[in-house]
Length: 118
Picture 1 (cartoon, rainbow, N blue to C red):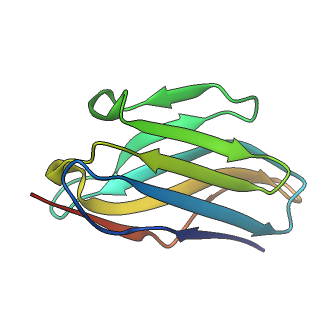
Picture 2 (cartoon, one colour):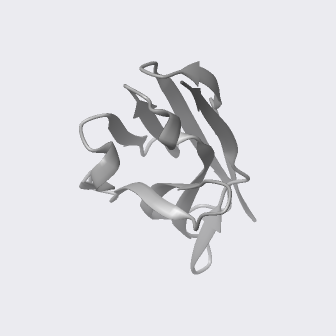
């Protein structure tokens, strides 16, 4: 079994910063793509940032230049540094990972709340 555990959410004022982490544990042979997603109340879940095993990144247009995704393959951990936060960034943030244990399978974390006050 594989688990993804997020940490680092919280309440911050507009213009502030937060860092999120996602630790992957369990039956892991390899981790391929990883990503951060978010879901605001009444809205669909959206991909905020993704990163390949080799470090190639992709971002939602609205967070480009403010958010940075990174990963530590040795620690099986994903990170998201969020700067210049805006109230519209308020959402539950989820990490995802494509993991090879006995086969390839996608997994999700439980989510962490990020609230940006104006």
